[in-house]
Length: 116
Image 1 (cartoon, rainbow, N blue to C red):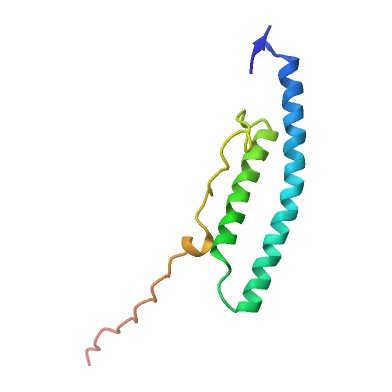
Image 2 (tube, rainbow, N blue to C red; image 1 turned 90 degrees about the vertical axis):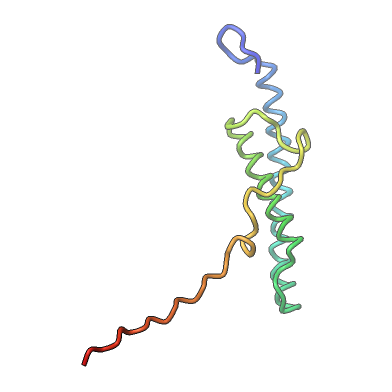
């Protein structure tokens, strides 16, 4: 942002307001998309009796990262405009199923031999 006389230029503020309105609209649309993803995953699991679709879970994960980037822009924590003005973000964290490792079962405790 250009600073003039110690302040932010009004055109920059008006432009940021326009982008903010666009991202607020995108957020409201994506809320519906995420709701559809949740319902799809639940129905998919119920009908197929299998793990939820990894591809759909990955899409939900990337949308969550996109939400994060938009909220950072809207709250003035970042100046970089998110998608479609930048690349669509990759997931910030691995999916839950990949993140959780199987914990080994605790070894059976052996009692020390009794000295009788």
